[in-house]
Length: 384
Ligand SMILES: *Cc1c(COP(=O)(O)O)cnc(C)c1O
Image 1 (cartoon, helix red, strand yellow):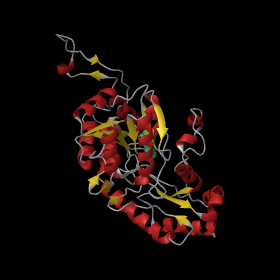
Image 2 (image 1 turned 180 degrees about the vertical axis):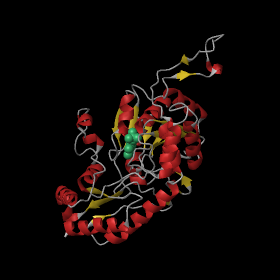
Image 3 (image 1 turned 90 degrees about the horizontal axis):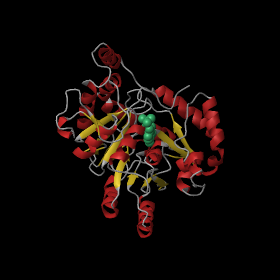
Image 4 (image 1 turned 90 degrees about the vertical axis):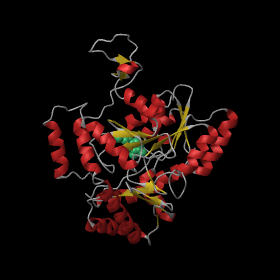
């Protein structure tokens, strides 16, 4: 089976992990801060806060922005459930904005129209989570200007797109957002096994997220309320969680990060090759906006025309021929949980069309051209 994605772990990675295992600290040591520093400088942000998943990063990001009961969070339906669940964790109301039919990211026209309506009905979102689908950055400059106009905060879910850039801005530099979140799950661009990070240029948001990832506890004497604290003193100031990344994971991440440029380069090479090899088939291929460098976490195509009705069959045939295709995504609002909150088929037609026609083809940095040729050959047969 050729998988749709897979991690690349080298002997250098293994050596880095073993070194930590033989050191004094398995958690709360020097490697997590080093990983954070490297992440922040790679992406051009002031701070990176490492946590145990992107899901946790989204949660602390929303909490740090003060999202709570009575507030509203918007994201897109064409994403992993975590982009919406972070709003539910905070007791907020979650709603969605449909995607654009070419970029498959948030549709700016629909977004602006929905904001205008929400502003007259007094139901504007407090936080909006645009998702960099498949590795392509969202149109952050335009989103940020809407954020200024309507007064919402922006958390970029860049789980797919570390290493991407937009008009020279590396994703994660938060030039046009409050916080940017990455995932280090093994199928993503770089991995720590499980892990994630929240990047920001705000000292205050970074401090809040750091506190939230470790129970809401502070060990900084300048923040203590006790007048003459004893040497063992620490204080819990807010209700936080244990979302810490281990030293073992950070060592793997730090080692992987050295290959980020190579990974993104190879992913783009393979994506370019797919584009060339598939151009004559009845498929809608991924569109990368001008000025954008996608990280190509995923290579997603859509069936078009009469092939659309064969979505299920095409999937099954590819899988039976050893091609590990996947679907990104079943629209979040159609998950039974979100349906139970009142969402219905027809609410977000473009995301639903995407869910009925998209196929994620195998793409990972160690993929050989021979494997890629095999994917193309089988797909050609299946569509014939
Ligand atoms: C993978 C992913 C997440 C969650 O990442 P974890 O690190 O597994 O928690 C969130 N959003 C998107 C878009 C993802 O692809």
